[in-house]
Amino acid sequence: MVSPNAGSKMMIQSYKHSGQLHRVWKNSVVLKGTESVIIGANDRTKVIESDGHSWMTREPAICYFDARHWFNIIGMLRDDGIHYYCNLSSPFVYDENDEALKYIDYDLDVKVFPDMTFHLLDEDEYEENKALMHYPEEIDRILYQQLDILIHWIRQGKGPFSPGFVDDWYEMYLTYH
Image 1 (cartoon, rainbow, N blue to C red):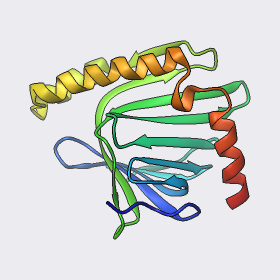
Image 2 (cartoon, rainbow, N blue to C red):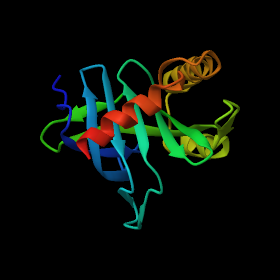
Image 3 (cartoon, rainbow, N blue to C red):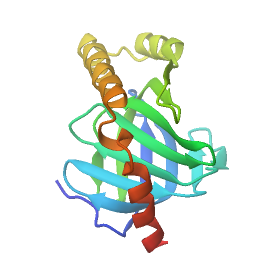
């Protein structure tokens, strides 16, 4: 598998289980690119929704993708601290032709606050799409196992939740910007 080079630009493309494009983040800078982990960053980047509507992100963000896990983690640097948004999703693939990181969004999200308290979001949306798009039982089982791993990471301060992780990668991003 090919991985992007640090300092290069990539798009982030989120799909639904049906194969429909869900959301695209236009310009993210690759900070680390390996076959198993890609860390990217963006700040005030354009996001395009599947219906064509677009908007701009409000703050710098460090995006963590791990090919071994069914989730990705976005750490957003805000005035009151780092807020995280975690998507339960397929492991990523990197498409070198499109210069795009791609994954399937499985609706369930976890919002993590600076004090490391968190909330599970979009359970209703997950149940609706699970029925509508016929998520296999295996996917359901994997997602809930991965949700347990994600919660463990949050509680233990692992990976992107470890002290200094987002700040250190943001400092690296500033060297490219």
